[in-house]
Image (cartoon, rainbow, N blue to C red; front, side):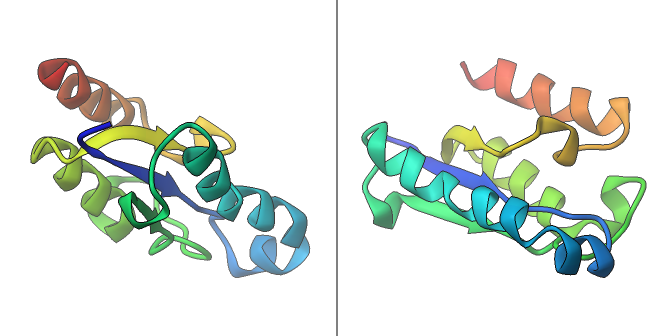
Length: 105
């Protein structure tokens, strides 16, 4: 709880953002879940830089880069998302995140 909580919001295309408004709203509602779990609203950061942007790897996904940087700086106590498959499309990026989290625990 000393570290913040991050809510990662992502749909890979503008069309999915337009077509799946309920899903997008559910993703943003993860902020309320973090608050219910004990984080102050001011300690919850929403990263939605990748919303409506398709990218197969971290190189083009600024939001994922930002998330990894926050984890590497040991500022993250919890990451929330509706589907973790939205977090990283490639196993390489997913494993990079898991490795960084494991080093800090």
